[in-house]
Image (cartoon, rainbow, N blue to C red; front, side, top):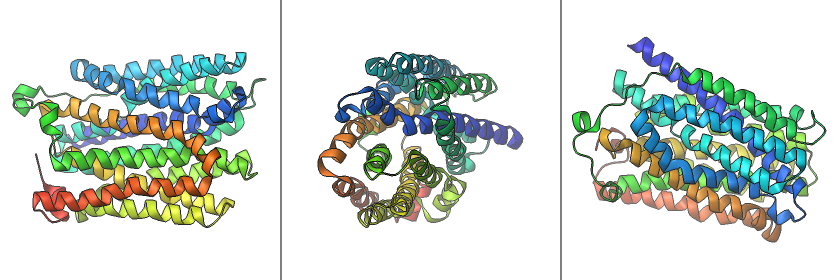
Length: 402
């Protein structure tokens, strides 16, 4: 059984890598492609916003599909959507149509909505074979993003000019990775337990979400992702304003993504040893450190260090939030609760994506960073609130069960 668990976690990690190749490539090119197709620089972030809107709209339907038909069917649907969206985006760049590009990125949101639950699929696999491995399984699957995060920007560097229309080749290449993902998904074997048998009667979502731990878990995931997205989407534009090259932008994004996913090799072990809330608090402090560095200058070094700290802070807050949520629901409730978390994450990201470009051009890079601080500090207050409401020490929350 241990060999089976390792294979399934390894497969999920590979699927996460392919998802992040897609995501990181889109991060590198979407806002610049939007700027190229639009006469108004305020509209440059529209393709990114469309992508996040698609992810948000499809989060709950994706959870419903997987609840009824299983993970393998759901992820297959997502991979097909990735291929279709890449084709639409390729055609949009060929005919130079911003609305069509937004449609393509919106459709790609379907892929992201299904793929966002890969970390929860790892928890399912651990529950089936080795429950004590659950937190580490979640963390390890997230490390797949490290591979995708390094390859994605590199792909954007050589593919953006491979065809006569800039970035058209980049979107076309993404079709290949969607096809590879579809093939690998067929090897996935995760049995979904039936709720009435193993999980008891499912409680209404409103009841589950009244738990202090559930509120904090969703807030940590959503706000960390929203802040990370706010600053990351604005980074290529800010670096262009500062006359830094596209290759330098790719370098910064790569280190940011390394910061996001490399800690996955040990975040699970840190949570197991020290507890969920301490790691979450460290994540908040790292986000604050990101802002301090960003305010100190606009050279390549400042962007690189700031975005790296932002990535590590996101990893700690997002992983700890995910781990905390798995302790708030019963097996019969997991799909709807997981879907709600992802919908909340993408909902926050809609606002941050839509606002990032405008806030940058109107207020500047420094003010944009300062605006991010209150949102992550909410989680610092929330961690203290949960510790008080539950009557547990910070470390004991890691071992609590619903």
